[in-house]
Each structure stands twice: as C-alpha cells, then as structure tokens.
Length: 232
Image 1: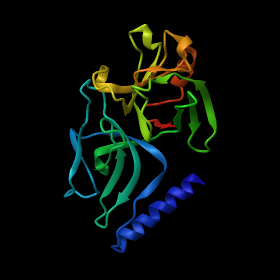
Image 2: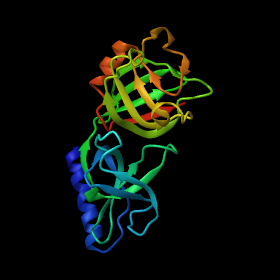
Image 3: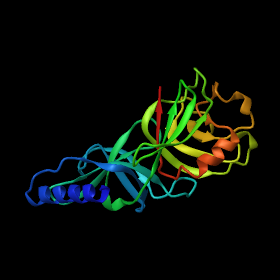
C-alpha cells in the first residue's frame, strides 16, 4: 500500500513538471534522514538558488562525523529540479531550509521519539502505524534551563559516553537548550545517568535522562536521523 502511494505521488509530480505547472510541496509518507554528500550546501528560504541563505551546511561536522539532516518534504520545480525541505540543527530551534536534491543521500527512518515534558515520559513510536514500541520515565530540564519544546528535532549522532554520569549510551539531538555555555553549546542529549533516583524530576540543564537499563533499550530503536518531538 505504501509503495502504491509513493508511486502515485511520483506520477503526479512528473505530470505537473511535464505540464509546466509548479508542483506543490509534497510531505514525505515518512520523514527521511539525509546525509550531506557534497563539501558544502546552502540551505535556502525557498526552493530556488536565488533565495536567501538560511544556513551553510558542510559534508562533515567539526568532529569529522557525517552531517545528517531530517528531510520533511520534497518539491520538484517546473524545470525538474528536486529540492528537500529539512530541519536544521542549532540555534534558533525550529529553523528550516531548502537544499538541492543532489546534495543528500536519503534513507528511511522507521521510528519517532516523543518526549512528554510535563509527564516526564519518553516514548518511541513506529512511524508506519503509530504503535508505541517503548515507554520510559525521564528527567528533564529545570525551570531555569527547560528542555525545549518543538517538533521535528532529530538524532544527530549516537555515542558511548566516557563519563559514567551520562550512563552507558547517549543520543545527540538537533535541539538546543538555553545554556550556551553547556558542553556543545547547549546541545540537548538523551542519555543514561549515574543518579537514577532523580528520574521523574526536572533537574537537568535541558538534557533528557533515562535509567541506564532504559537507555540501553532505546539504543536499538533510535538510529541517526530519528525524528524527535518534545511536547508540553
């Protein structure tokens, strides 16, 4: 069924291009992870090379890891050029931009993380049908350094922390807290903890903490590019 929908969408886009009619932006059936494959790409305010630049993205991050973005929708222009609207990491939270299709290599993501900030709860949902695959209590940011709210943040990287305070596993997200002097400039992480007694409380600098046994389970459900919604 999903394949038929994607085929139909592709056919409609092709027909619009052939007729010289501007194609509307078509949301992807599911978000896609996009790995930058060119040395540098300009994310623009509109799917047009003359549009103003929102952000400059490089193929590799400062730590030499591949640069990944979350693709939210795709547009094909009358000339046949493909553009992707992407969620951009960094400040300010929630920024979006359009990048040329040839600048990224796409792959599907299958799950979504949803954090309910007031309820202090994290869920992993399967994108195909919304089924909850995993649920766990969390600690979130303090009132002075709250975990930021927003939709379509995403997992930028996964790693094993060297400091036991962060537990056995961590996800680096594209969201940023208020504290710019925090490691990474305020990057919001999802990680384990050496203080499980604080789970369920608002005690962090914006990061989302899980019990170590829960973050180990999360490891198998959240690939790089996994979308993240943080809701009230």
